Length: 242
Figure 1 (cartoon, rainbow, N blue to C red):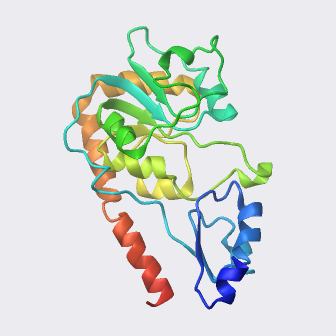
Figure 2 (figure 1 turned 60 degrees about the horizontal axis):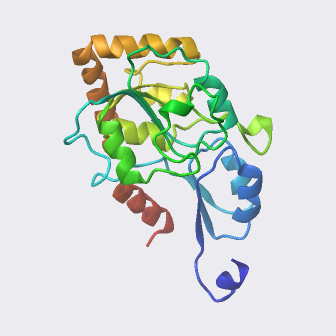
């Protein structure tokens, strides 16, 4: 990075793992002209080493949209199977007739895990954005659950909502939220789910109340309608004054 800058090139780095890996990211930020973080919790630390701006997660309207789709799954979750997530989801008591799907990197579970029958791919495989969005559109109810793994325990608590919430909302999906301040502000119409026992109740409610469920999903989609990739690019260009 230093060599690139020595050639007179402007270096902008987008840090996608805030706040969890901010110790590592701040060290990289010191070598850049401008930094972008996806969570402002530790933005003061970044600004001490280089100019930094918070730009929230966004979605691609060509990929993340509510057009088409048939609700063939009762519940889906696409993401990495961090140990904290595995422990939480293994405590959920799923209805016997529930159609449940997990996708992403779930190699941390073994064959004896109650989640094993629900994993749609090889456990070391991820799911690309296009397929993820298609799965969301095929789902009655989903959930955002943040990881608890971080460089240090105190870095696990964030302020901003993650990409999963933005993408689920853009796809018109009803979902429960792991609470965070930004999510509480933007998505008051969506329920908070903190304990595994609450998820099965939420799923039952969502299946029994399709109109109310979809009304909340539509309100969530409207709340993030302007959070597109293109608008984020414009914001960055404004910051750079180019």
